[in-house]
Length: 393
Ligand code: GLV
Ligand code: MN
Ligand code: MN
Image (cartoon, rainbow, N blue to C red):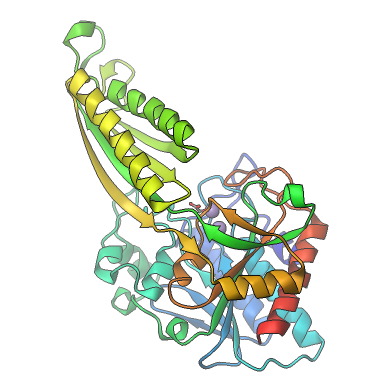
């Protein structure tokens, strides 16, 4: 089956009323996607394994020095159809084509479905690959909680997994290369008039939790000058984040917020907001976040509130293996471009030579239902992946 046909099989899984997808790790939609992946592995004659972190690995041959392909099947809330599934479907399609041609690899090849790449459920991005590489301690990861207050350990147990097995994975430590194909996020490829690009780098990025506390009180009975309203401090922080990111050519987003008690006729007592910040360099990111925190603290003093800031998930700058990316760019005659989006490939790059292929996104929209690529470009991505597999395996 081609990648377009494989993706069509996923069209109804985790669909939202807006036409997008909500597929959070270990929820019913991703459990269905895991079954789909397992069935595809069996149909392709691949041997399916699952590590202690929930990462599914479908093997063509087994052993060390493997070429790993793949991506993830989870999504952000109300995300698009391709961020993640495109890479998994393209890898399965590429392997299917090579097998049908009778081609024999010189090293094991595996397709990986990394669990919880988006970090939409437990707050830490790339949780499956962080656990498998040891980039996050399993004790810490297993204690993370979702919005309902359930820990990762509880959720894994409820899905029949033994959380004591979570942690660094041997299959990954013994691998030779990882190549992840992904939908392009943004429009860096557009000026090159090319369907496929090769990644050079990932901007350093992270997530910070901001807790703004004040005094809950009556909306009608409290004079404006007598208030300690954390909503004001929060609002000043959103504006400061935008202003500072604009000043330095970086990115700062507050896309998630909780209000307590969340009542129309009450001054809130607490606002919790999550900041996503990204910059071209690590010092740039540090300066951006420090600037936003300073502005939040100044606003809190003015408003008689408090603000507490905690990093939840950070990823340093990733410079993909230069030799590998030049080799693949020459092989594919493809442009080389950086990205502001995070990926499991960014986590694996610290452990083994890693590369990414990006498939053109005509609008640049991602993490939204409108995320798209043309059927022709999806086929071009599979063609590129087939060439890469022949080159590296
Ligand atoms: C994942 O897509 C991220 O960049 O946060
Ligand atoms: Mn994403
Ligand atoms: Mn992704």
